[in-house]
Amino acid sequence: IGSKLMLKIITIPLITELISNSKVVTTVSKSVGAELKDNYCLDRLKIIGNGVDVEKFIPSLNQEGYLLYVGRLSYGKGLNDLLESAMQICKQYDLKLFIVGKGELEKSLKNLVKSENLEKYVKFLGRIEQEELVKIYQNASIFVFPSHYEGFPTVVLEAMSSGLPVVASDISAHKDFIEDGVNGFLVKKGSPVEITEKIILLNNNQNLRNQIGANARKTVEEKFTWDIISDRYERIYLNLKG
Image 1 (cartoon, rainbow, N blue to C red):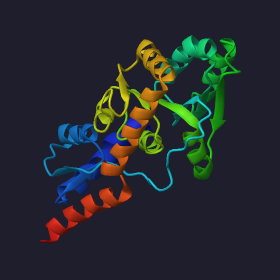
Image 2 (image 1 turned 180 degrees about the vertical axis):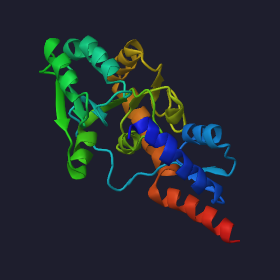
Image 3 (image 1 turned 90 degrees about the vertical axis):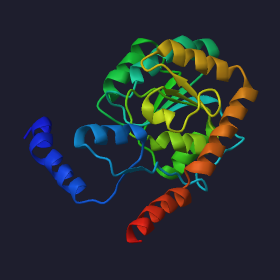
């Protein structure tokens, strides 16, 4: 059965049934909530957010100074935008870009890097274990996440918890927790030019990197620890029981 047909005859009716029998539906972001409201006429909705382990993903002073992307290498992630930006800045500023993850675009992305003679600068690390991923975050200087659609990307929270300044697309999911120019930068979706501008701005100003990174860490500590997220769920559950 094709994926679209499967969605129509199985997934949507199942979700509709589950929602109709639920007193409250929770979701991770306003953007996902909006989709649920539009598709299922849902009004019993609570936005919870997502969480990150702030004891594990912690800042470090031992940065190696590379750009970092973590996520699937798939359509809709803005990876061509990222590589187009890399073509403009990696050689000029002697910056490396580490790409963590696997996906259907891996081969074509590697071919693009090779054709542009960027193999010295762009490194594909594949899937890595969480313990190593923590170090990868800590040693980076800027996290770039130009995705065209997300529900609530945990990898961005992990980067922020690690004290990294984030350059992310201005999609709804990112606006839930990134305040442009305060704890990260939001750039127009699909705009390599804006990605490049913000990377150069951060790369040339260590004080700005440090301030944005510190604000990012504070945002996670105040709103997105697992203790905070679990408390939100507990309050909902207790209100239902009461």
